[in-house]
Every structure is written in structure tokens, then in C-alpha cells.
Length: 194
Image 1 (cartoon, one colour):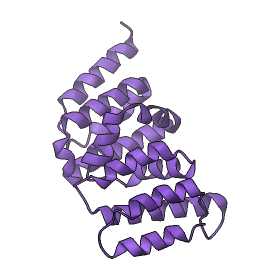
Image 2 (tube, one colour; image 1 turned 90 degrees about the vertical axis):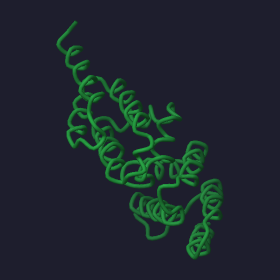
Image 3 (tube, helix red, strand yellow; image 1 turned 45 degrees about the vertical axis):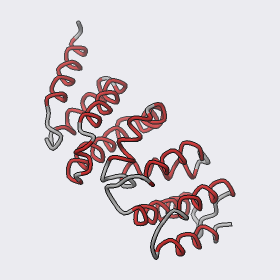
Image 4 (cartoon, one colour; image 1 turned 180 degrees about the vertical axis):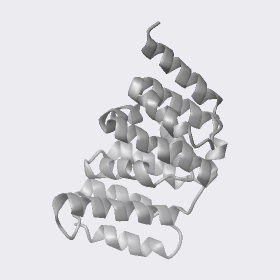
């Protein structure tokens, strides 16, 4: 066994033994991702799954989801984007179980799916967010729409976002599921994008 393989297995064992709230978890995941991205990704899926119920706690979700998602993005954003769609279980843990759904890295990922016209995978994520019980759905939709609009405007150096019909219909479908005062405002904002 090579030194690299020994290091990989020692990192896996250490991560397996760590508590969800251990702040050193980021260091270990970052090192493992640098050593073997695929294995680190699978270990992350396992660690989130082992703590699925605890992800409702914002502090644990931040430590296990937000910080680690960011580490994977920093190590290889393209590899992360390649692996995420192949793991429905991980997407469910991030967007349906986690209190940090629709924030930081996972928000940027969802926005990029919408803006690159990958409507089907974005739709699957919206379904998960719509049934996430750890936060206010209306507030999450407002955050998502704001991020999509801001990302579009920054990327295209414009003041007003412009989305195609498929993108608008996707956003409208989930904005219409909102209950409360934000619904009409968000629906109107989406309708103005044409």
C-alpha cells in the first residue's frame, strides 16, 4: 500500500469517528478531497446520511453541509458539479433535510442549474426544497430568486434579468406554492422577466 493510500484510509477512519459538530471535520474533508475526490464525496454522503436527523440543527448543518460543500467547490467545482446529479440521496440530504438548504454553495449550484437551462435537475432540487421542514419555504424561494437574478445581472452586466420561457415556468411553478404575502410579489417578479 502506498503512502497516499495509507493517508486516505486514515482520513476515512478519522472522519468516520468524528462527531457532526467537530469543527476539524472541514480540515479532514479538504485533505481527503485533495487526496481522492471521489472517495471524499462518498464519505460526505455517508457522513450526512449518518447525521440526517441532526441536519435540522443549523449549527450541525452549517458544519457538515455548508462548510464541506464549500471545500469541495474550492477543490474542484467542476468535479462536484459532475458528481452531485449522480447522487439523489446526497441531494435529498442537502436540500430536503438540511437547515442550510438554499444557502451558500448549494444555492449557487441551484442558481447555476437554472441559469444554464438545466431545468430537469433544478426541478428535482426545487421539489426537495418545497418539502424541507427545517425553514420557511417562502423565505427560501425569495433568497433563490434574488440569487438567480443577481447572478444573471452580474454575469451579463445588466440591471434586469431575462430568462427564457422554460426557466420562467420552472420558477413560477414553485413560487405559486408559496403561502403568505411573498407569493404575489415573487410571482409578479417572475412574470416581469419576459
